[in-house]
Image (cartoon, rainbow, N blue to C red; front, side):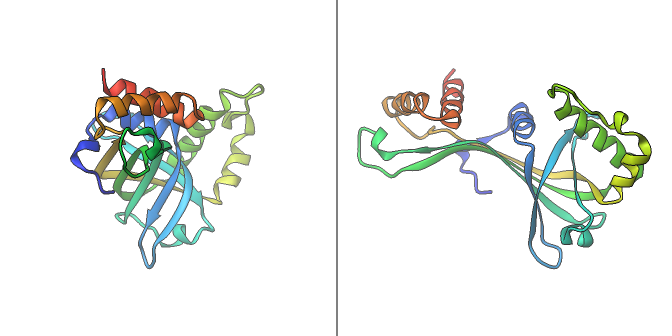
Length: 203
């Protein structure tokens, strides 16, 4: 991911927020050929000094058939994003897009049976907690879950490089910057979210 210095962030709390709120991300690999799979991802912070990404894909997926320990992959997370119209400037310019994104390059470690079980348990709990009648892994019975696990391919991605991008019109003069915020506050959910993010970087 190309990140001009103006848009580069070292804020790891922002990284965690983007991953947490946009967990359905792309797992990209280039073993044999370029492959990409949308999958649910979680940041494992059990050891704050050695965080890593957890995910799983279908064992029938061609990507699963090629990946092995030590292979390099890319996890791509797109956060809030929205169109910025050139009509919002007080001068002639081009339209653009404001957005937040995280890319994690890392080495694959295949999950063993117990790690995959724990991963599915945590992932299910994260999303079932908000349901009216939550069904947790423990409610399904271990025999049933382990049968279903045969079709899952669990991965840990140990980061080697982390890139955090926050492109929020930092290159605009104050009048245009504030006008962009005003326009976005009257747009859709993503636009309003970007407006709030823009306000924060000015504090």
